[in-house]
Length: 195
Image 1 (cartoon, rainbow, N blue to C red):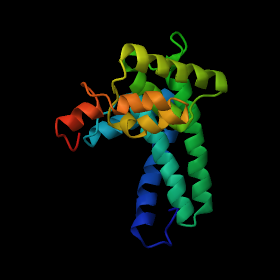
Image 2 (cartoon, helix red, strand yellow):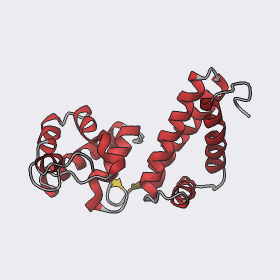
Image 3 (cartoon, rainbow, N blue to C red):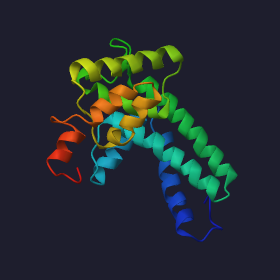
Image 4 (tube, rainbow, N blue to C red):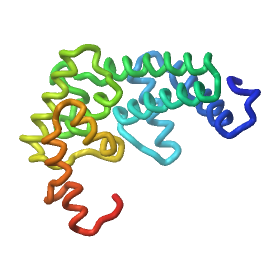
């Protein structure tokens, strides 16, 4: 085991989840199939998510594993999980980039939900693809959704900061203060304190 000599819960977590990550990453041959296996694993424990969201969760999980290994002083494990995370990030793009629509996924009604995660993990292989994704998101927010929030749990946390990181400060503010449904401003006015 990677961290046999470290008797703490962080080491136990790293061992358990590290073995799962290794098995899930190495089992099927294609990036999309690996993500589908991971999505099925999440569904089996009561957390069903679309393959695209499972792919993002997988990348974030591998990055967290690299960070944990590093903090536990496991340089070899940190390097291994960093390499796996980098491969999973590349795999995410090849699995979910839709060349016919020049977007992620196949559901253009899910543009916000499907573009925020790849922007947070920097899945795009080059600046041209990143610019295309950012413009697609900008257009969707302004035109299709009318500055309304249209993301789920995975995309909602990084939504505003991702917009701002890509120069969409005004759009982020407008979405954040939207007072009609669906939106945080609307929910706030209705007295909601949680999702």
